[in-house]
Image (cartoon, rainbow, N blue to C red; front, side, top):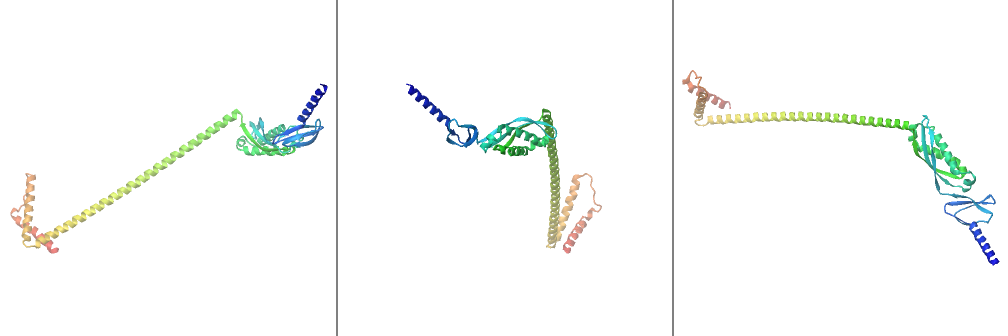
Amino acid sequence: MTSLITFVVIAALVLLTVVKTAIVVPQKSSYVVERLGKYSKTLEAGLHILIPFVDRIAYRRTTKEEILNIPSQSCITSDNVVVEIDGVLYIQVQDVTKSCYGVNDYYLAAAQLAQTSLRSAIGKLTLDTTFEERDSINAAVVGAVDEAAQEWGVKVLRYEIQDITPPQSVMQAMEQQMKAEREKRAEIASSEGDRQSRINRAEGYKQEAIELSEGEKQKKINEAAGRAQEILLVAEATSKGISLIADAMAASNGKEAAQLKVAEQFIQEFGKIAEKSNTMIIPADMANVGGMVASATEILGNIKLEK
């Protein structure tokens, strides 16, 4: 019975020793082993066996990229405005041994150095440029922290500002300024629109006047051309009529026919005068009507001769 108990105890000790000495290191991790209180070696990913009661895991480090929140802090700009700024720092352990023995707590050291570097960078800028120069501020913080972190075996990858919060009074002033700028742009846009509208209307009136004058000009040209054509046609018709009369006068009994036509026309016109009015103007020599007809016939004869 005693031997059985002894065996169980020994087996338990062996099992405990194996559990304590067999170490499995995860991927993207490194363990620092100290032997009797002194650095011995760095274990990478995989299974490792330690010497019982001599070796121990002193530090465990991950080599993944780590995110470190930088608490909000008050920074004073070059124009003496206090702003609250917080950010995020991205770091990665590249030398495990230095990260263990180069600094007591590289998280705290990186955060403190990032804060002091941020205050220094903000102190060189005015409030307005602080919002515009985020990239340059981030680059300044990364450069300052990364230079010091090399001694800690840590690489600073990037720094990003999350929020910049100015005092409430400054925010109100900025809002008023932005409102004034928006109103100014609105007024300018409205005046430009009104100006363009006036220009467009003036151009329209000008074009309308030109079109009206061109239309009036063309109308007058067309009327003049019509009158000229009318005069030409009347002249041609008159010329043809005279020619026909002259030809008729030259024909047999033409002179007698012309005398008869003139007499008829005279009598018709004299009768019309009598119809329209009770008062008549009678020629002094009514017996000489034949002489009048002869005179008219002589005129027609002269026209024929001139032709």
